[in-house]
Image (cartoon, rainbow, N blue to C red; front, top):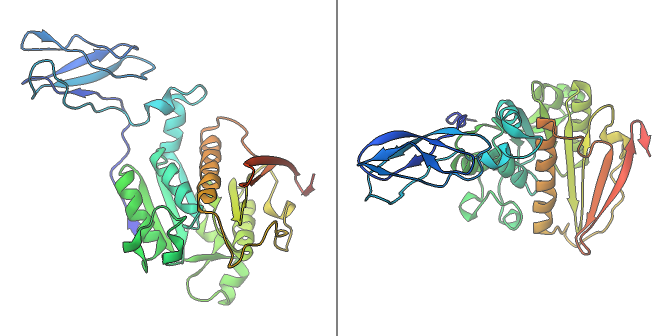
Length: 318
């Protein structure tokens, strides 16, 4: 299912309503509006955070001296970041990103990447929303129970970030051999084929079969993979790139169980904490702002709030 929405805002505009006419105004770096008048009066308004002068528009439909509406670039705080700037925001706008898994991790990942201005997101999941998902899968509400997760998530993201193009792929990624043999069952998709053409992939799945299929596909395609996992009170996040893969940390067997909660327990807010860390790493990778967590696995125990950093070497655990 395809959700195509209007293109992202690419330029800074300010709209100040204060009279009966609409005139161009110029802003200095302090945010003051200069050179715009209506009815013989000079209007000023805040446009904080601009790194350089911009063109603005003054429109008045209110009493003199009042400011009824301000329209400004939603990403101005990104553009003002050292090492980010307009170039970084443009890289996000041009990026094609796949999010595999639309659950406890995929929801905050998708939320923050969409609202950060990533231009094209593809959501991949075969699951349906259940009541037990709602405490941690923050894009869904009670009315979404029973719906395909990718469709419900795409609808929510469309309301929050109408400048993003969102593709919803209702399916489950498996390795090529499983897909070709038909053993993957209904909805099984060849991971390598499905992930072609993306600039970056985020693995938000919760089974080791899916995790290895996604990781192997990204390694074959040489696409950076932001990886995260949550179990019980523990969370993990890293970036696999530059020859490092998931199999360097977990070759074939599942990771040792750090803690087991009855019924597969998971802390809802921890999903948000790990998911937003993954989204941050995605932005760092897409914009070239830094190395990020390439070569480092971070593990958190929510009970003491401590993050531990473990080095990863290509081909073996360091």
